Image (tube, one colour):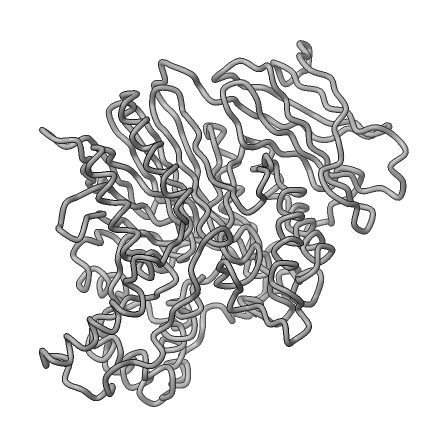
Length: 571
């Protein structure tokens, strides 16, 4: 998540804690859950499948053993009883062994489109659990269901969102939008409850080396709720920043310092991506950083997944060196012009990019081909908020006690609050830091009559955003996916009477919904006539006993007389 966001708005909200308000993330109630037994056995990290197409899919497991003295074999069948076995083969190691743990993969091909399959692995006398997977359909698709997740921070709480999805039994594809894990060491971000919940990170230090990343992936992979969802449906994963380091870009990251012994950025990226490709059920491109592409969901949809961190992203921008004194009159036209020009000079350059030229061209070609094929839907799997989001004026909008809390906190907290008087973005780590490229994307899509739906992670909030060009022409709708466990910025003040989401909507008429506290996922159900997005929430992440509910429900339908879809709230 954006460091600008964390060091400013989060700090501003947290400043009110000095007035005696309790932070929800620091609750010390006695747990009602029973300690979970640690995963054990050769297959303690379960099984998974991913990157499906119409005829093949990647199958994955990991073996924990003192000696790899037997082959790792895969069986794939048409039924869960394995009475009709289609494939028996030997899997190959997917990455180097660390602490007796070795991941294995096999690309199962020659399969039929739109079919369920079951698979399991064998190692010596040990047999894994059974996984269910499914190839992508080819034609005549009446319905397809995607479950989208983001930001799963192990020490912050239990992965109840994964469990809620795994128990459904109706998901065709799981899409993880990034921050599958976090790189921080013990005592870092969102770890206030780690010992009480029995979720202390391994290793205890910040992960930097290949061995470090593998150890953290292995810890996440042994989680029973994550294992359940991996075994329940095929996955598509993209990374955001925390799979390497916070606010990662082409040449570095906010959370990487070579002078502190963390080495060269390229070495850290290489270590992180070797672990990523080894410990997830993904196909590996020739250029490891170039994990972008498209899945064709029969004649129903094209799903485009993006890479916006390591391949081409321009250097990070912040709101440092603000161009006017913070006590300036925000209504003064000269002040307004100065701020606009400053923002344009800093972030509005045509050369600033998230995607890079090659990926951008691929995206536009794919949109055009999807429209030419007559597919009703185009879906983006996208890391950071695509729609624009202007920060509310925190010197006026919050209640008096919160404004005074920010003023008393002073420093960066009050500085950011005063910057918001001038219409600054919430953060520049999102597409708001790359407005020229966003406008090129929107304009090209509009020209191609390629409206789209965006599934976005990163923010730890639910969003519904009406996406429009700078000229006000609609191009699509964005559904922001809240976190699995990572805390919202707003959780650092326990103030349920303060409607932060409504402040966002007031400052941004094109934003239709902003839910700031919920944890969960988005369930997107596609049919030829409509796309329905359920914002599924879980009642708690601090206990294994929970209930799944509904934050809101949204329907997207083709607009009458035009190519651009419209969105409406159903509940």
